[in-house]
Length: 143
Length: 143
DNA sequence: TGAAAAACATGATCTTTATCATATTTAAGA
DNA sequence: TCTTAAATATGATAAAGATCATGTTTTTCA
Image (cartoon, rainbow over all chains, first blue to last red; front, side, top):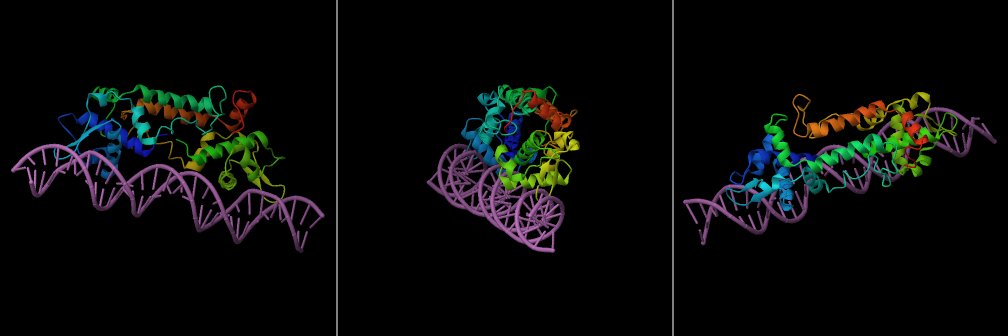
């Protein structure tokens, strides 16, 4: 459903959401340990996210990655789309091209709804929403 | 969520469920076209399923693959377990080892339920159930 | 204005998954 | 009992995904 890369990216963004600000930037290799992702791997992912405006960054000394206010209201689906290319969540569970509500494959009802529910939640949930959940004690870091 | 191999395997089993019987066996290469899976790939998958009693087969002339009555009441999760090894559906959506109901990761509620619902359906749905759906016109072949 | 610290860009390697190929075994039928 | 048709077993190759490495650019600060 989600690639490892997408999972790592979500974890990275979440960590930035909790710990960074415009004044407090975070190095890729600093992120690496708490979210348990290899340093050069998370660096590459964050760079890709930065290119698409999902995270912010500045180069040079005192530089690093962070989230600004705009970044914080981005829905999670954007992260997945950038990293996995969007195709992964679109197809039916059996990867049939002509499977849809009106012409469902045998697994469709059982799985299709599940899948589209998940996609809907990714579309409706922003980074800020998850942070609120964590701060309210409903879910937990570390990742 | 499901590997290609599991999808193929499910398609193969479904096709056998619809078209085969103890009297009417089906060759691997015959299956290949209608379910749109490379012939030697589906052959290998069916052999693996056969080894675990999920499909039946006989060698030699007039041989082939088929489902007996016992095969038809097997829940779909068995297919996935044999092919994907069972690990794929067990972990949380972010692949965190210490994520559970009592200590959920930020995606847990949003995704965990979705995922466990899906697993539950795989556990509760048998091959026969899907066949009934097809015969009732609620879902469709070809795959 | 030079040195250092950081992201950025690119590509190499390693691992897993998917796919293909082939030799062996079993069973049917002449 | 020989030939043939099939599954079975095993392993080789190809493609994708994950991981690592390294050189380039930008920015800060002395």
